[in-house]
Length: 421
Image (cartoon, rainbow, N blue to C red; front, side, top):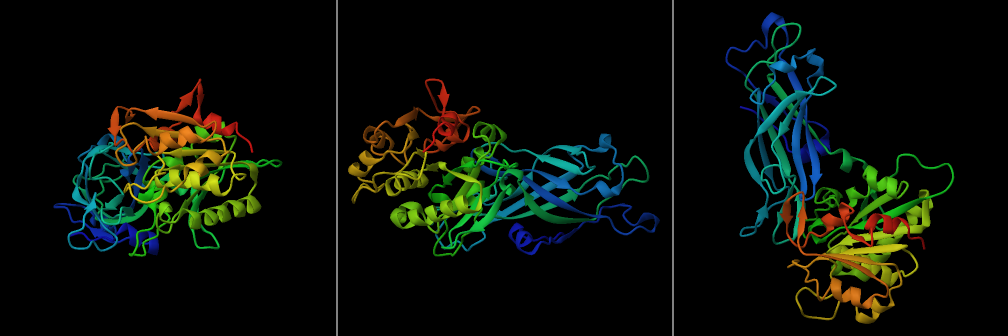
């Protein structure tokens, strides 16, 4: 039977495990040839509801020209198993682990001659996600993925005899949007990912967009799990600003996504200077325009974006708090940001939430903040619906990631891009 390794081991060690396969009547050794083995890549996309493996690419280009007419969805089978990278305590729960067959919807050749197996996927469809949510931690973690490929019929080549692959080697997880963000850590130890625009101008500087994640994307304690990954894989919050559309609107912008060592609302005043340290370091090292720095955050990060404008009133050109927390969610204790602090905010602010948010009540948080922040704008949605799929009401960051909020004909990205300190 086949063996494999976890994706976590692949990423850490740079090697996969051989998956042996012997088909009845196979001709793998015909003509004195060595057994045929190929590696494969897990191709992922970050959907609005989180990252999913959407296809598998087999490195078959070296096998010679393959007849695409001989490829069908039944040529290969794909099995996927996803498990937690850290132990789950008795009685605890992790959502999104799975052990199932993935449906192959298409088998095709890419321009390099590699076989691509397209997999059934959709918002809310189980069995393709790369993250698991640990209930007691309130955190997402990268699942360990083990994919098993089975060949059911020989591959027809344009020249030579048909080929049966007897060995598959699992390779890396590939998500071009996520991979475009480089890995970094500040001097204080705060990890972050950074997107840099393709072509820096010979003269002049670029804007910087600071994305502050929600509570589920911080480190998972006490497990010492701190991956610098989930901030880009859980949703499109940071990725949206690195799309060609956003880059055109901002005339090329850096996008930085710091990852909390726990969660922002645990101790926002302590985290604020750590975030500022990253911003100041980027201003020194990169061609960042200090007058065009923008802060955007969702939920926990929505609170932190407000906290940053309270702590540093002259740092940002604009702030976009999304379903941000202002009052303690428990309903007890002092506000995270006082009314007096909200009334003193002078940074141009556009708040976003959905009326059906049952995680962070809009009335006592976003709407309350809008009533107090001078000159602030607000977008209130009834529900969070995108491409016909209704998400939980708390997920209003989807709209900002798609540049949907607009007032008087101006969309939120264009509004941000026009702001200068």
